[in-house]
Length: 363
Image 1 (cartoon, rainbow, N blue to C red):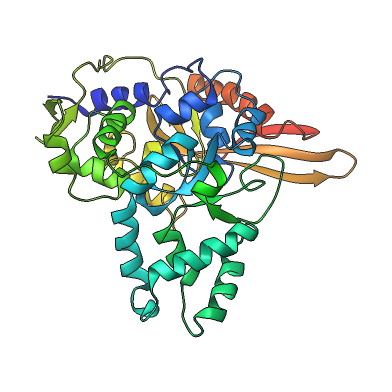
Image 2: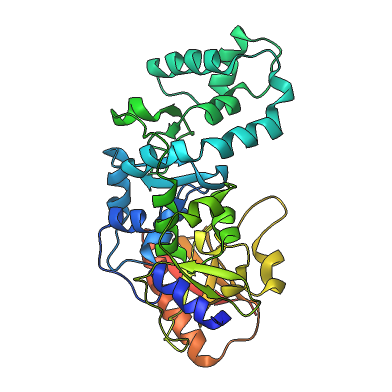
């Protein structure tokens, strides 16, 4: 039987948060089975908090040389993944994207042949990358009066968001091309579901089938799990948890340094029962009604508050950056000192160009 604290330490260990791991950014992205990238720059903080000496250009270079891409995958949300994982995982996610399309735009697309729509859209994007607004307008000339044509294209074909979107220090509207055209290689055959589950457990386990389905958005994974060589545990509520036979579990008292997580970090989104990392009473403060997952701090391995960087100009002082830390409960002096020290490093990374930097605790 695995206690909540044991599951917490196992998750932190596999998420590279008990210690920073000296690996390349691409290796980290692949180990994590991608990083949610709904906020285009959140993955930079996610890698910074997991890797020593991570630099902005380490990720920016992966995007510009097409070694990594941003594409809709797990849960139908934008993820940063390696090019290899893009091609392997996107076909596995097709049933999810089909289901989401039927639920959201199915009735509005009556009479539209989706194969024809995909063919026309791909030809348009071969000419130049297109935003959804541009794609919607062009497709509307072929199918007037229809709504959600661009979203339908995203569901039926793999669209990657091309740079400068997602590149630190650059700006640009989200524009899309077909993944095969961008990467110059074909998609996989959709047979990678079993490998995907094994990799999920390597990055998030031990976990239940419901956890796997929460992370991926897919259904029917129990049949996939039955075909794998896994070991089982139980949590304190008797829920069956699966894990890799070779996986090790750190002790429940393993030290967990304070950490700053960026917006939409998958640590908070990849289990049906999130209490292994966040108390239920804090969920409403982290998960907003409009779908934003706020940036959080971890204290002793659990979500303990929020953080944000406010930037502004001060007369004669130039631009200033203030890291605001908003704990959910009062913090001890040692914890405040640890957060301040880590916060200084975060400010240097995220706002190194500011002429002045400060840290404020909002208590």
